[in-house]
Length: 299
Image 1 (cartoon, rainbow, N blue to C red):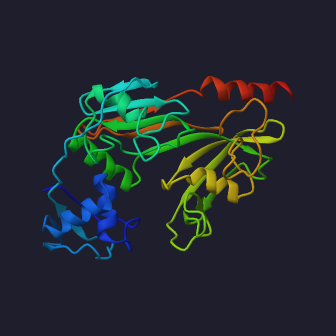
Image 2: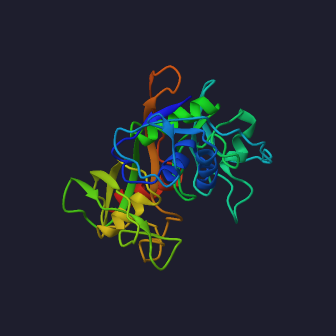
C-alpha cells in the first residue's frame, strides 16, 4: 500500500482534508476511502475527523479511477518536456487549468488528454498543481497514477521549487524579503482570498528584486507554500499589488497590460520514478516582455 509520514505542514489538519490533497481528489472521495477501512493510521483503521500529528504514518489503498467523460479539445499551450511519467507545459494566460463550473470546455486538461494524462481526480486527470487563468507559465502534469501520487507527495513535502516573475506597483524598500502571513477565504467574499480570515493556513512567500523600472518593481518570487492566489494576496497585503491585478490591486490596469503581470518561469523537482533532478525555465511571454520593455524605455 502506498503511504506517507505526516510532515509539519500537515500537522493540526484533519486527515480527510490532507488525504484529499495528497490524492488530488475531493474531500468526499477521501472520506469514503477512510470510511471503507482503506486508510491505516499507525497500524489501525483511521477516522476521517482525526487531527494529524507530525510523524504519524499513513497507508492507503488508492481509490479506483473513475472513467472520465472529458473529451479532447484544441487548446493553446507549449509542450516543454515529455516522458512516460509526466509532461511539463507552458500555459498561456487566458487558459483555465481544468474544468469547473462556468469553465467546462477549453481547459488545459482537455487540450492534454491525447497525451494520456492520468492520476488524481477524474475531472482533472494528471494535475499536480494549478495556475490562475491569467497567470502564464510552467505546470507539471502526470501521465500515470503512480507518477501523480509521487509528485503530489513531493508538493506536500515542499520539494518542488517554483519561481515566478512578478511586476508590482511601486518601489519596494528592500531588495529581498519574506512574507509569512496565513491565508484563507475572505469572511464576506468567498471568491477572494485574504490575510483576514476565520480559517487561516500558513503561507510563506520569498521575493528578490530583479529590476526597478519607473513606478514599479520587478520581483523573482519563490513559493514555500502554495495557497490559492498566494503571491497576489501577499504582495497586495504588503502594499505593492501585482501590476494589472484588478481583483487584489483595486485599481484599473495600466495601459498596455491586459492581465496581471505574473509568470511561473522556473520549475525544479525530482523525477517521480527515477529520482533524477529536473529543471525547466520558460521566458516571459510576449505581452509581458513588451510591457516591461516599454517601462525600461521610458526611464
